[in-house]
Image 1 (cartoon, one colour):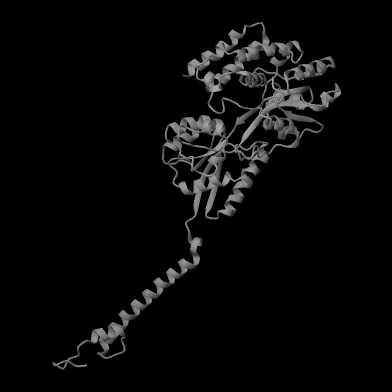
Image 2 (cartoon, one colour):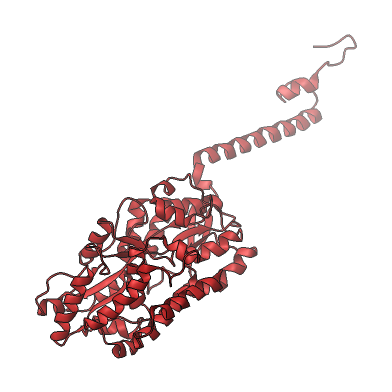
Length: 446
């Protein structure tokens, strides 16, 4: 169209619609270039958008989780290599880098990283670590409203919590009981592991009369397990009352009776104090039991794997004999996962931790560790030879090892080992001489 002046009225507008209508050649080429540029840009943008929609999660950013643990190596795999492989297959967007750091090294290696800019995302922890790091604000509060928290038994959950906060997802509980060589007991006509004190005394007498060493009872571990189990079982106050100093061990009737009981075991020929003095609970004592040179030994279920590889060793894992018919299943809360407060991968870390709480995944670790589930489903990875210990747990014989739950201060543990080592060499010492040392350790720890 032409306006009154005879000049084109809207050439640019027409060329914006299409470059092939009207105008001179120069204008045509300019508009053609502009037109093609816009069409190409729109096409490219549409293509990118389409690819994004089609690709979906495939283009999601890959996440690497830095996980530290004192298990998962060749010596103590704990099922972790298998579990991590399974986790990564179910969560392909997350890569897990597991770093083995020994438990003792964890105390010194991890804190600088937590305080600096190089915090691991997820760490294997126990309650002593949780107490220190949680109180310092270095751990993420996992909360009490997650699915797995509701499955932790109330007593254990209370011990794991720090007020309203929860800094650890528990992985396992390991039994501490009495290893019993049934082959040796059968030689003297005994067919079941003793679970009561009277049964223990009778078993010791029969073995000793047959020239068989009845019991490994080192002051550095086995004797303390026995005394702690029996002392707590008969006590009229909770372990934390003694651990806080609110009541003293020296005034506690049950622990006084426990020391008297050790003297009774000596009289029943259960152990020779001089013989025990030459045994290291972490080396020679284990060798003596696995070699068939002693019939019984209070120790931890973590030895089941090694003992089961000894050809011809016919043994069971039973509760610690006590005044109750069930005996005591002395449960040790072991390990859990914690998330660093400064982790850059909080969501992925939570996914990892929650995944381990699923019963079908946790079972792999329980089987590898011969451990018990910390949850209320009663799951276990113990073999049939631990049936006597399992029965004690089922019949109400569970007592939680107080050091693992911070009910007793850590320095007290070493004092108990030292004081009982000295007492076994001279059982004429008074109960007060032994138990006052415990009370001093509690007082010093306050």
